[in-house]
Structure formats: C-alpha cells, structure tokens
Length: 213
Image (cartoon, rainbow, N blue to C red):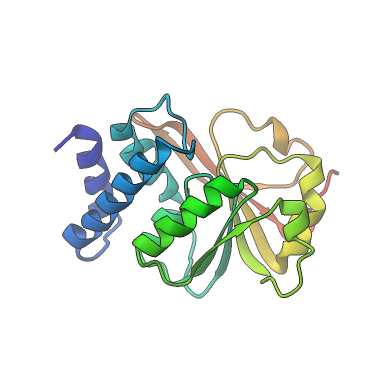
C-alpha cells in the first residue's frame, strides 16, 4: 500500500469510524473516478499526482468531521470542484443533506456521474454561481456552508448570508493566508500543524457576522 493511502486509512481508524475496509473500498472507488475524470476535465490540479489525493484532498476534507456535528444538517459545499470536501464527508456517513455547488457545467456534469456511481444518498449537484443560487426559488437554507478552495470576497457576503439559516455558519478551510478574513469576526475551530498537510485551520463565521466591521 502506498504511504499516502496508509496515512489516510490510519486517519479513518483514528476518527473511530466503523467498518474501515468497506469505507476504504468506497474511497478507492472515488479515487479511481476522480483520477479518470480529471484527465478530461480539470476537477483538481493536474500538477498533483493521484497518490497525493489521499492526504491532500481526502484527509484534508475530513478535518471538518473532527470539530463539527453534521448529523441532520443541511450543508452546501461552495466551489466544490472535484466534490471536495463534500463527497469525502458524505462517504463517512455523517447523516447530512449535501449540495455540491460549482459554476462550471463540465465539472457539475461529471460530479453528478460520480455521485451516482458512488450511490451517495442525500447528495445533489447544482451548477450555478453563488450569487445566482442564493436567489433561486425552492432551494434549501443551510446550517453549514463549507468553503475549501474559494477566497471570501466581499461580493459573496450577501449571498452567503441569504443562503445560511440565522443560526448557520460559514466554515472555511485555511492554510497560512487569512487576508480575506480581515475585518470579519471569526472563530478558529481547528488548528493543525501536520507533517503531511502543513499548517491547516478551520475558521467559522456566523451568518450575522458576514460583513465588514
């Protein structure tokens, strides 16, 4: 077993998840789908070798499971790209309703195929800009919005507030740079200095605080 894959499996064990062999089988399926589809459409950086997906994408995505309760929550993965972090979170059966949002039609078409191939219930894919999706009729309101690969630009404040429930939170995956959070009230809910991931933080912003102060 390649070292990155073993690191990921050890992490699943550390999380205390049940039936690790079956879970690894599902992640192996996702890894294969992501690797194959990424040759046609740039879902994740092609500079990264596929063996690195195990730690840099899958393990990283699951950091949120350490500090957030997803059970019975409605969750939006904003700027999902290759289904990250949404698909890994759903694969560990966290019991939430997940919407994967991306504005690129080629990506969302493939993501729909991946979600179907993985038999992910309670998971849907939407192709829209955040600003447009926020004003769609009959779309859900969210307990959590996850943002792993998009900087928090000021143009996103209003649609994010509109999409979140009053009690909801935006959760951002950050490394060293947090310049986009200047002037925004926020809370660090996870901090990690990892030999494989480097410096990683999860930052939480309440719905009411999505504005410059």
